[in-house]
Each structure stands twice: as structure tokens, then as C-alpha cells.
Length: 448
Figure 1: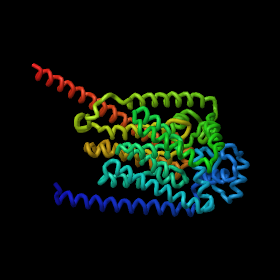
Figure 2: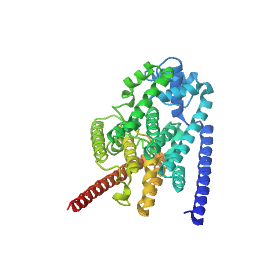
Figure 3: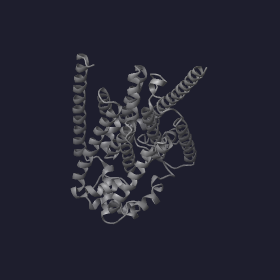
Figure 4: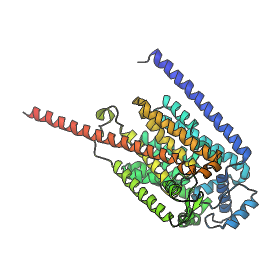
């Protein structure tokens, strides 16, 4: 039954949602204006230059640094990096935008990624149930530092975030096609979400997993005219070597475990290649293996009745859809900390599991853990601000070695999701076993 109080609450929620949407769009628009004026997004120009090479029938994966600089000069680009380390799909997008010229293409690219963050936050809010959750999603995005850093560097994370949000929506709403397409498109733009395909198979989400493989195959076919089969082959042949596996990036912008351990054990502040790097690599590989095994164990789909839900398992337990969402969040968090490098801006993806955890804590009225999570998010913002503002002081004092808060946030989110999944699955299995026992006992009494 509708009441006046319910109607007033809905109106207030709608007003708050629209107000936050306006504030978020205004903040991102203002930030984009600064970016356009300062011409800061060097990563976009890397995509753009790779697209120019594809247009000329050349491969961005085998070009020398000298030739790369020559190309930049021809295109009148002065702000870029080398080499091109990304999947062919982002180069293809750069090629599509090439008729606009470098500056015009950059404006379109930045706008598309900003829209991707807004749309992704909206999708996550809808996946969680809409209403006040939209306010939560938009507000958290507004104060997420990696979002702004993504745009500053011209990265593709905004578009990838939108597709990961689509995958999350698909998983939470049991829409296999949407979930599969979201995973496939995110993996095409940034390779690490490919781990979500394995996650879907592991969880026996057959329809979503097969949809993701079909979508990936369709994207390859669709992009072959822009990339060529040779371009895809070059990427598979050179992708690992392009990560500079023999060296370790120690900048606080790199937040993988390799960098965190390297900052603790190695002397240099940019790239390290010494005898001690072997120990760092061993630690990183062992950690990645342990994290993968722990993730697989927690997410092993335990036998339970389809009728068993959160009500049967207790009010604090997650339902089947939420368990899948938490599992997806675990995998996202894990992929961010393994591997040779994950830069600060990519941790914007943590918004998805962060919002799911926050939603569950709010519903359970667990305000202290929620507050601690908020403090940690603010600390992550401060992590990059400190590095940018007082970099020399950080270097002189050695404090730069402690700037690993995005890594900490990722691990806290992973562990929180793991605990929630484990407890919910355990409670559901126990509840179903108790229910089955009760039915047997009732049947035995009736038989007497």
C-alpha cells in the first residue's frame, strides 16, 4: 500500500538523484575543460598514433622508438609515450577517430570516457535496485580520484568501466546476453577483464560465459577490417614482451603487488632492474597464485537448491544474484593487483564492488565498517594528490614507498567480498540441509 510518506521519500530520492547527476556532470565537464586546455591526455595520443599506423598498414607493436617519434612529429603530436602496449581494439578506435585530427579526436575521446563513467555509475545503481542506490552510486563516483585521473591521462578506463557495469547489471539481473557482451567489450579494451570469462565458466554461468565468447568472436570479426589478422597476431606475439618483464616500475602510480613489494625492497624510484628484482618477481608470482587459488576456492559453486535464497539463509545473507555480483567484484579486485603493473587510474573499476559492499552495509546498518570504507576511499584520493603535489619531498624522505593505498583498497574489497560470499553460501547450504532434514522428518511422521 502506498502512503504519503512513501511518496515524499520517492520525491526526495528523485530530487537528490537529479541534483547529484547534475553535480557529477558539471564536475566532469569542468575537469574536461582543464584537460582540453592543458592537452594532458598522453595515453589517448598513443591510441591515436597506433590507429594512424593501422591506417598505413603498419603494426604498432613492432615499430621502433625512433620511428614512433617520427610519426608523432608528422601528426603534430608532442605529448605521448612509447611503446604501444594495449589491445588492437583501442588502436582501431583511434583509427576511427583519425578524421577529426588529434585535438578533435581527443575531445571526443575524453567526452566518451566521461559519459562512460556516468552511465556506468547509473547502471550499477540500477543493478543494486535503483532509488537511493542511484544517489549512492553517483555520489561515490563524484569523489573517486581514479575517475579524474583516467580522464587526465586520456585512458580508456571510462569506456571499460561502462561495459563492466553492464556486465554487473547483467549478472545481477540474470541477463546473460548483457553480461556476456559487457565482459567481452571490457576485455577487448583492457585485457585483464578476460579473467571474468574464466570466472563465469567456474561459476557454471554457462549462458553468460558462452555469450561473452560469442561477443568476443564477433568483435574480432567486426574489427578485422580496421586491424587486420596480422595486427591481432602481432599483439599475441609481442604483448608479453611489451610489459618489460625484466624490469619493475616503482612509481607510486603503479599499484600492483609487484610494485608494492618493489618499493619496499628496491632502491630506485622509477624503473628497477637489479639482482633483487628476481626476489620481487618470485614474491609477486607466489602471491598471484595464492590469490587465484583462494578466489577459486571461495567461488566454488556449492550445491544448493534454487529455492534457497537470502530469506532462508538469514537476513544478512546474500541471495544468488548478489553472490554472483560479489564474485565478479572479487575477480575485478584480484586482476588489479596481479601482473607487472596496474596504474592508479584503473582502480576506478573498484567502484563496482565497492558500491555493492556499501549497499549491503547500509541495509545491515553497519555504519562503522561503512565509514572505514569511506575513509579508505578518501585516502586513495589523497595517495595520488600527495604524489603529484609534493613528489620531490616524497622522494627525499622515502615516504613514496608507503603510497600503496589503492592496492590496500583492492585487497580490502577482495577480502570483504570473499567473506560475504563464503558466509552466504555456507548459510544457504546449511539452511537447505536443515530444510531437507525437516522434510524427511515430516515424511517419516506421516508414514507412521
